[in-house]
Length: 281
Image (tube, rainbow, N blue to C red; front, side, top):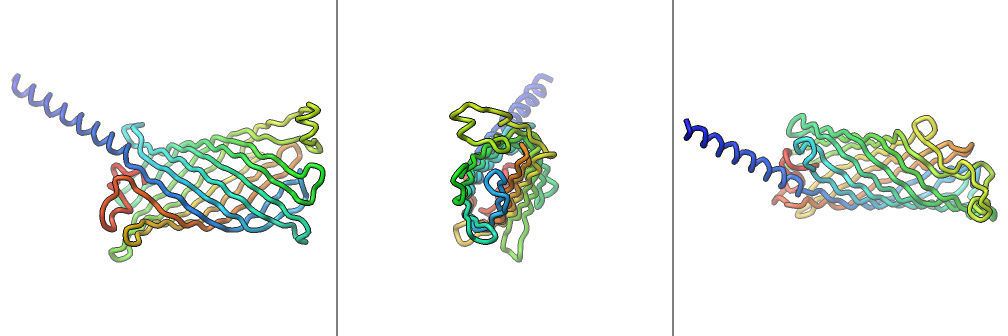
Protein backbone atom coordinates (compact mmCIF):
# COMPACT_ATOMS: atom_id res chain seq x y z
CA UNK A 1 0.00 0.00 0.00
CA UNK A 2 2.79 2.39 0.91
CA UNK A 3 4.47 1.82 -2.45
CA UNK A 4 1.22 2.56 -4.28
CA UNK A 5 0.67 5.67 -2.15
CA UNK A 6 4.19 6.98 -2.83
CA UNK A 7 3.80 6.19 -6.52
CA UNK A 8 0.52 8.17 -6.71
CA UNK A 9 2.13 11.06 -4.86
CA UNK A 10 5.06 11.04 -7.28
CA UNK A 11 2.73 10.99 -10.29
CA UNK A 12 0.62 13.82 -8.83
CA UNK A 13 3.72 15.92 -8.14
CA UNK A 14 5.00 15.36 -11.67
CA UNK A 15 1.61 16.36 -13.09
CA UNK A 16 1.48 19.56 -11.00
CA UNK A 17 5.03 20.52 -11.97
CA UNK A 18 4.27 19.84 -15.64
CA UNK A 19 1.10 21.97 -15.45
CA UNK A 20 3.02 24.79 -13.78
CA UNK A 21 5.73 24.57 -16.44
CA UNK A 22 3.11 24.69 -19.22
CA UNK A 23 1.46 27.68 -17.53
CA UNK A 24 4.81 29.45 -17.23
CA UNK A 25 5.66 28.71 -20.85
CA UNK A 26 2.24 29.92 -21.97
CA UNK A 27 2.70 33.31 -20.30
CA UNK A 28 5.97 33.74 -22.19
CA UNK A 29 4.42 33.37 -25.62
CA UNK A 30 3.87 36.89 -26.94
CA UNK A 31 2.24 38.14 -30.13
CA UNK A 32 3.46 41.62 -31.04
CA UNK A 33 2.57 43.66 -34.10
CA UNK A 34 3.09 47.16 -35.45
CA UNK A 35 0.74 48.46 -38.14
CA UNK A 36 0.86 51.63 -40.21
CA UNK A 37 -2.10 52.94 -42.12
CA UNK A 38 -4.00 55.74 -43.80
CA UNK A 39 -7.59 56.52 -44.56
CA UNK A 40 -10.25 59.20 -44.19
CA UNK A 41 -11.67 61.03 -41.21
CA UNK A 42 -14.87 62.97 -40.50
CA UNK A 43 -14.51 65.45 -37.61
CA UNK A 44 -17.16 67.57 -35.90
CA UNK A 45 -16.56 69.80 -32.89
CA UNK A 46 -19.28 72.40 -32.35
CA UNK A 47 -17.10 74.20 -29.79
CA UNK A 48 -14.93 75.23 -32.76
CA UNK A 49 -17.32 75.08 -35.73
CA UNK A 50 -20.86 73.90 -36.54
CA UNK A 51 -19.57 72.27 -39.76
CA UNK A 52 -18.21 68.80 -40.38
CA UNK A 53 -14.63 68.63 -41.61
CA UNK A 54 -13.44 65.76 -43.83
CA UNK A 55 -10.02 64.73 -45.04
CA UNK A 56 -7.12 62.26 -44.91
CA UNK A 57 -5.83 60.56 -41.77
CA UNK A 58 -2.69 58.59 -40.85
CA UNK A 59 -2.48 56.08 -38.00
CA UNK A 60 0.01 53.83 -36.24
CA UNK A 61 -0.99 50.93 -34.00
CA UNK A 62 1.15 48.78 -31.70
CA UNK A 63 -0.31 45.62 -30.15
CA UNK A 64 0.96 43.17 -27.53
CA UNK A 65 -0.98 40.05 -26.60
CA UNK A 66 -0.06 37.23 -24.22
CA UNK A 67 -1.62 34.63 -21.97
CA UNK A 68 -1.87 35.14 -18.20
CA UNK A 69 -2.25 32.72 -15.30
CA UNK A 70 -5.74 33.98 -14.48
CA UNK A 71 -8.60 31.44 -14.38
CA UNK A 72 -6.39 28.41 -14.95
CA UNK A 73 -4.47 30.08 -17.76
CA UNK A 74 -7.54 30.77 -19.94
CA UNK A 75 -7.29 34.57 -19.87
CA UNK A 76 -5.18 36.61 -22.29
CA UNK A 77 -4.06 40.22 -21.89
CA UNK A 78 -4.10 42.65 -24.81
CA UNK A 79 -2.28 45.98 -24.82
CA UNK A 80 -3.11 48.37 -27.66
CA UNK A 81 -1.48 51.75 -28.26
CA UNK A 82 -2.42 53.83 -31.28
CA UNK A 83 -1.85 57.39 -32.45
CA UNK A 84 -3.57 59.09 -35.35
CA UNK A 85 -3.67 62.52 -36.97
CA UNK A 86 -5.97 64.00 -39.59
CA UNK A 87 -5.97 67.09 -41.79
CA UNK A 88 -9.55 67.94 -42.67
CA UNK A 89 -11.42 70.75 -44.43
CA UNK A 90 -14.93 72.17 -44.36
CA UNK A 91 -17.35 71.67 -47.29
CA UNK A 92 -16.30 74.93 -49.01
CA UNK A 93 -12.59 74.22 -48.36
CA UNK A 94 -12.14 77.64 -46.78
CA UNK A 95 -11.14 76.32 -43.38
CA UNK A 96 -8.95 73.48 -42.12
CA UNK A 97 -8.76 71.46 -38.96
CA UNK A 98 -5.88 69.48 -37.47
CA UNK A 99 -6.76 66.61 -35.16
CA UNK A 100 -4.30 64.51 -33.19
CA UNK A 101 -5.27 61.78 -30.73
CA UNK A 102 -3.47 59.14 -28.67
CA UNK A 103 -5.37 56.06 -27.49
CA UNK A 104 -4.31 53.34 -25.04
CA UNK A 105 -6.45 50.35 -24.15
CA UNK A 106 -5.88 47.27 -22.01
CA UNK A 107 -8.19 44.26 -22.11
CA UNK A 108 -8.43 40.90 -20.38
CA UNK A 109 -10.16 38.27 -22.52
CA UNK A 110 -11.40 34.87 -21.45
CA UNK A 111 -10.65 32.50 -24.32
CA UNK A 112 -13.34 30.09 -25.49
CA UNK A 113 -11.54 27.57 -27.71
CA UNK A 114 -14.40 26.11 -29.74
CA UNK A 115 -12.06 24.00 -31.87
CA UNK A 116 -8.57 24.13 -33.38
CA UNK A 117 -9.68 26.72 -35.93
CA UNK A 118 -11.98 29.05 -33.99
CA UNK A 119 -11.56 31.07 -30.81
CA UNK A 120 -14.00 33.51 -29.21
CA UNK A 121 -12.62 35.98 -26.67
CA UNK A 122 -14.57 38.26 -24.34
CA UNK A 123 -13.81 40.42 -21.33
CA UNK A 124 -13.45 43.88 -19.78
CA UNK A 125 -11.34 46.70 -21.15
CA UNK A 126 -10.06 50.08 -20.02
CA UNK A 127 -9.67 52.84 -22.62
CA UNK A 128 -7.83 56.20 -22.21
CA UNK A 129 -7.61 59.01 -24.78
CA UNK A 130 -5.94 62.38 -25.09
CA UNK A 131 -5.31 64.89 -27.86
CA UNK A 132 -6.35 68.09 -29.54
CA UNK A 133 -8.43 69.63 -32.33
CA UNK A 134 -7.14 72.86 -33.91
CA UNK A 135 -9.17 75.05 -36.28
CA UNK A 136 -7.21 77.44 -38.51
CA UNK A 137 -10.19 79.80 -39.02
CA UNK A 138 -10.71 80.70 -35.36
CA UNK A 139 -8.87 83.56 -33.68
CA UNK A 140 -10.77 83.21 -30.39
CA UNK A 141 -10.84 79.64 -29.04
CA UNK A 142 -8.90 78.11 -31.96
CA UNK A 143 -8.22 74.80 -30.23
CA UNK A 144 -10.00 72.20 -28.15
CA UNK A 145 -8.28 69.75 -25.80
CA UNK A 146 -9.47 66.15 -25.64
CA UNK A 147 -9.24 63.94 -22.55
CA UNK A 148 -11.59 61.06 -21.82
CA UNK A 149 -11.55 57.50 -20.58
CA UNK A 150 -13.92 54.60 -20.08
CA UNK A 151 -14.51 51.07 -18.90
CA UNK A 152 -16.17 48.75 -21.38
CA UNK A 153 -16.36 45.32 -22.93
CA UNK A 154 -14.27 43.78 -25.68
CA UNK A 155 -14.89 40.80 -27.94
CA UNK A 156 -12.68 39.03 -30.47
CA UNK A 157 -13.22 36.21 -32.96
CA UNK A 158 -10.06 34.50 -34.30
CA UNK A 159 -10.31 32.01 -37.15
CA UNK A 160 -7.40 29.96 -38.52
CA UNK A 161 -7.79 28.41 -41.97
CA UNK A 162 -5.90 27.34 -45.07
CA UNK A 163 -6.18 28.05 -48.76
CA UNK A 164 -4.53 24.94 -50.12
CA UNK A 165 -1.45 24.57 -47.93
CA UNK A 166 -1.20 28.31 -47.29
CA UNK A 167 -2.09 29.25 -43.64
CA UNK A 168 -4.11 32.34 -42.78
CA UNK A 169 -5.44 33.85 -39.54
CA UNK A 170 -8.45 36.20 -39.59
CA UNK A 171 -9.54 38.32 -36.63
CA UNK A 172 -12.50 40.58 -35.87
CA UNK A 173 -12.50 42.74 -32.74
CA UNK A 174 -14.98 45.22 -31.26
CA UNK A 175 -14.50 47.42 -28.18
CA UNK A 176 -17.58 49.09 -26.68
CA UNK A 177 -17.17 51.71 -23.90
CA UNK A 178 -19.89 51.60 -21.24
CA UNK A 179 -19.00 53.97 -18.38
CA UNK A 180 -16.48 56.78 -18.30
CA UNK A 181 -15.60 60.44 -17.83
CA UNK A 182 -14.79 63.26 -20.24
CA UNK A 183 -13.31 66.73 -20.02
CA UNK A 184 -15.24 69.46 -21.85
CA UNK A 185 -15.64 73.23 -21.58
CA UNK A 186 -19.15 74.50 -21.10
CA UNK A 187 -21.05 76.04 -23.99
CA UNK A 188 -19.52 79.48 -24.67
CA UNK A 189 -16.80 79.04 -22.04
CA UNK A 190 -13.25 79.84 -23.14
CA UNK A 191 -10.06 78.19 -21.95
CA UNK A 192 -8.87 81.63 -20.80
CA UNK A 193 -11.86 81.81 -18.46
CA UNK A 194 -11.22 78.32 -17.14
CA UNK A 195 -7.48 78.43 -16.53
CA UNK A 196 -6.60 82.14 -16.20
CA UNK A 197 -9.67 83.65 -14.59
CA UNK A 198 -10.66 80.53 -12.68
CA UNK A 199 -14.27 80.57 -13.94
CA UNK A 200 -14.79 76.85 -13.64
CA UNK A 201 -17.99 74.94 -14.31
CA UNK A 202 -19.03 71.39 -15.03
CA UNK A 203 -15.92 70.49 -16.99
CA UNK A 204 -15.59 66.80 -16.05
CA UNK A 205 -18.68 64.87 -16.99
CA UNK A 206 -19.94 61.31 -16.65
CA UNK A 207 -20.32 59.45 -19.96
CA UNK A 208 -22.11 56.29 -20.97
CA UNK A 209 -24.09 54.98 -23.91
CA UNK A 210 -26.71 57.75 -23.53
CA UNK A 211 -24.32 60.64 -24.30
CA UNK A 212 -21.19 58.98 -25.75
CA UNK A 213 -22.14 55.98 -27.92
CA UNK A 214 -18.81 54.96 -29.40
CA UNK A 215 -17.34 51.84 -30.97
CA UNK A 216 -13.92 50.69 -32.13
CA UNK A 217 -13.78 47.83 -34.66
CA UNK A 218 -10.82 46.10 -36.25
CA UNK A 219 -10.50 43.39 -38.90
CA UNK A 220 -7.09 41.84 -39.62
CA UNK A 221 -5.64 39.05 -41.75
CA UNK A 222 -2.24 37.42 -41.08
CA UNK A 223 -0.27 35.60 -43.78
CA UNK A 224 3.37 34.50 -44.18
CA UNK A 225 5.69 35.78 -46.90
CA UNK A 226 8.92 33.79 -46.73
CA UNK A 227 10.33 34.44 -43.25
CA UNK A 228 8.01 37.33 -42.41
CA UNK A 229 4.45 37.26 -41.09
CA UNK A 230 2.48 40.12 -42.60
CA UNK A 231 -0.76 41.63 -41.34
CA UNK A 232 -3.27 43.73 -43.25
CA UNK A 233 -6.29 45.26 -41.61
CA UNK A 234 -9.12 47.75 -41.52
CA UNK A 235 -10.03 49.97 -38.57
CA UNK A 236 -13.43 51.58 -38.14
CA UNK A 237 -13.12 53.98 -35.19
CA UNK A 238 -16.36 55.77 -34.25
CA UNK A 239 -15.95 58.21 -31.35
CA UNK A 240 -18.73 60.64 -30.45
CA UNK A 241 -20.18 62.56 -27.52
CA UNK A 242 -22.79 65.16 -26.65
CA UNK A 243 -21.95 66.96 -23.39
CA UNK A 244 -22.48 70.54 -22.12
CA UNK A 245 -24.68 71.22 -25.18
CA UNK A 246 -21.65 70.57 -27.41
CA UNK A 247 -21.33 67.83 -30.01
CA UNK A 248 -18.14 66.07 -30.94
CA UNK A 249 -17.29 63.15 -33.20
CA UNK A 250 -14.43 61.60 -35.13
CA UNK A 251 -15.34 58.87 -37.62
CA UNK A 252 -12.20 57.20 -38.94
CA UNK A 253 -11.76 54.53 -41.61
CA UNK A 254 -8.16 53.37 -42.02
CA UNK A 255 -6.49 50.58 -43.95
CA UNK A 256 -3.46 49.16 -42.14
CA UNK A 257 -0.42 47.04 -42.98
CA UNK A 258 2.45 45.82 -40.84
CA UNK A 259 4.47 42.94 -39.40
CA UNK A 260 3.66 40.38 -36.71
CA UNK A 261 6.27 38.85 -34.43
CA UNK A 262 5.54 35.71 -32.40
CA UNK A 263 8.08 35.10 -29.67
CA UNK A 264 9.21 31.48 -29.54
CA UNK A 265 8.83 31.53 -33.31
CA UNK A 266 8.06 28.27 -35.07
CA UNK A 267 9.75 27.31 -38.31
CA UNK A 268 8.08 27.15 -41.69
CA UNK A 269 4.61 28.40 -42.53
CA UNK A 270 3.34 27.29 -39.11
CA UNK A 271 5.19 30.19 -37.54
CA UNK A 272 2.13 32.42 -37.96
CA UNK A 273 0.30 30.33 -35.38
CA UNK A 274 1.41 28.71 -32.14
CA UNK A 275 -0.25 25.73 -30.36
CA UNK A 276 -3.82 26.69 -29.44
CA UNK A 277 -3.43 25.75 -25.78
CA UNK A 278 -0.67 28.29 -25.18
CA UNK A 279 -1.01 30.98 -27.83
CA UNK A 280 -2.91 34.19 -27.04
CA UNK A 281 -3.68 34.58 -30.77
